[in-house]
Image (cartoon, rainbow, N blue to C red; front, side, top):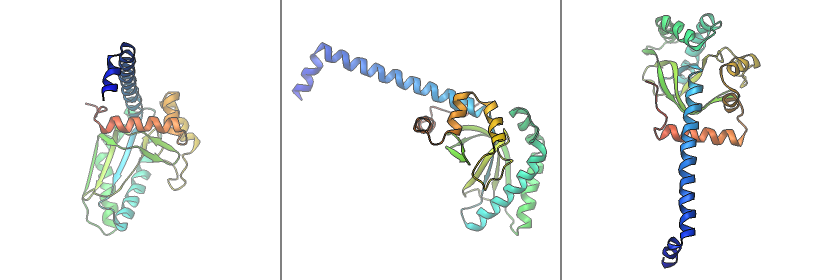
Length: 221
């Protein structure tokens, strides 16, 4: 213990410790600024669809996918030609009751009587993977469809740019959809969402997740 105290009395050692601390503070500030910038810019560029099942039972999860398929079919007729995120949100707002009716009719036709809550808002998402595209944790504008108690696993995709209009079972987003997403993001942002195998990208995802979980990245007002 005395040796440690003596080290602190050494001016050179003290200076190294101070510089190391200042470097840590500077690096932390840069990390927070970077993560906030990336998270905000990506979230400002996409509009998501979020379908939440009543529960995690196999029956409720299967019902979720049927509801999803019918909603996607309708969305395809509405949003396929949207040129901006704002246009996609406006169209969704104008047709929100139709989205709810499609979900309710689907649930009834499958023999269930669950209620449905459909709303558009800014919601918190963890890191999510859609085929070979990933989105970092953060707050995103989304059309959320809650089935029944909405306590089950959820399914998501991107309404704008239209990553939803793909074969969701293939695990690969078509190049045309990737080009739409790339046109909405800068080069670094697109690298972050499309390069799932890069250690550097995974580290950046972890930074975004940490800052989101600690409240340093918050929902838009």
